[in-house]
Length: 302
Image (cartoon, rainbow, N blue to C red; front, side, top):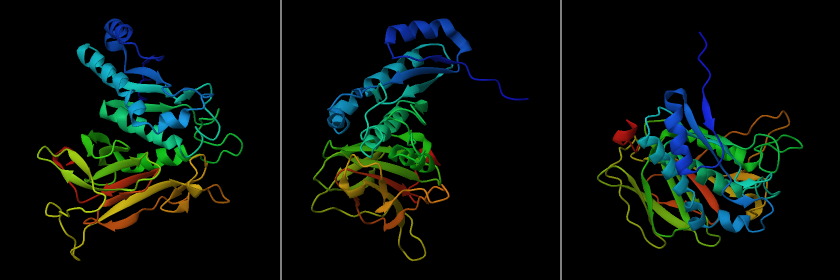
């Protein structure tokens, strides 16, 4: 027998009092509570990139996620939280911004932040259409956010872990149980245009994660990690940057190589570089780094 279709709603922008009443009246008939996000404002705004690269501006949307989580928790509903539609900048976004590399800072931050507040599904506006589509509207080749979504899907599991970064506020950090192993995957994004940040991952007593900024010196600790037969522990890193350092570029580089489909339309391989785990993580200016640590096993991911 085919599964029953899901009942989702209401869509629209979140308003706590209205959603509280809505959930009280839908009771157990609803599978998912949905809301829309266009937190960057209109696509014609000439300050979109300034908003995207401003950590204080990005943090504002956490209020919505936190509030909706609390509304659901206090209700008797069995519905889970979904972002039913989100394109960042409404009215079709902005050419060479919402379809360019710079938008992945906003998009991946949204995926990370929504997961922290127990959002189960995040629906992107759109696959094809407007300037915020994941595919180019002319030739249907992937825009940078398509690859960001693909790499997120391959590396980040469904369970989010508490993460904090000690240092510059220009680093955005999220951690999940890994999808491909029993380890963890860390996402680090550097919103700064000049500073290279060197960081290490520390596990505190409650097995949450802490990222510490080290610019000139760092302490290496590997006692909590098992060694392989060569005595070397490696991690997998995926460094995403814009072609020629141009944030408006519609070409994303993975570890220095352009992500482009071939003549047959096949997607390029998503391959990491392997780094000795005793080395710190380097996050270049205006770059995004996924770090898969197979050897770091915490109870929440076991």
